[in-house]
Amino acid sequence: MLMTHTSEPILQGQRALVTGASSGIGATVAKMLAAAGAKVVVNYAGGADRAQAVVDHIQAAGGEALAIRANVHREDEVEAMFAQMFEAWDSIDILVNNAGLQKDAPLVEMSLADWQHVLDVNLTGQFLCSRAAAREFFHRGVVPELSRAAGKIICMSSVHDVIPWAGHANYAASKGGVSLLMKTMAQELAPHRIRVNAISPGAIKTPINSAAWMTPEAEAELLKLIPYRRIGDPEDIGRAVVWLASDASDYVTGATLYVDGGMTLYPGFEQGG
Ligand code: BGC
Image (tube, rainbow, N blue to C red; front, side):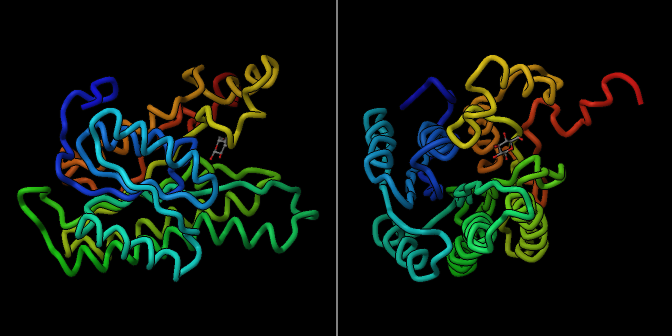
């Protein structure tokens, strides 16, 4: 058991699927869920070698993992991925809707293709995977030895589900959509003992935003937007995911947890106003 991230296997025996888990936040989330005792499907769309590296890391630490390729916005691929997971491990207990991307452009230059692709992956992908997981949670119900809930869905959102972001209309719209998709699913699924929550990361050091922290100048600018004056690490998000996936948060549903060093606290108003 990997002891560096969490000391207790609080997810022992549970089966998790993390979308977009070959890099960035998703890769760390997959490793930390495994360190907490879960078996983990490492979903990826491209870069089989990177997904395999995550699987190898989990297995080397004594965990169980399986890499499965699927584009989360393609219905047939999502259905095939869940079928493959159920064939291997019978069911699912935890879904982390993490896959997401940016295709930035000023509004007047944004192509319909780039608008559509970001909405497809970031929002439709969360719908398709949540639907597939919820169907299984319904069908199976609560397994008391594993968890008090019949299933847990964790949606990766962003601080840009509340902070408008010039030059990123597609991304901000997708995350705003994730926010209400999550709450609506939470309301609808709660009577079935399915918990649905979101995590909204701020600036976390990953490849998606490397331009924002690569140079000292960029980093200094970015830190002005973070009252806590630290750029986040993927582990900051992983710890929140493990908590939301565990019975420690059993009475939490429909919540968005901002893990952002205070980015949503209007840092421009630290002085003045
Ligand atoms: C984006 C990052 C950005 C962060 C804070 C995230 O959702 O993907 O590129 O650094 O929000 O603005």
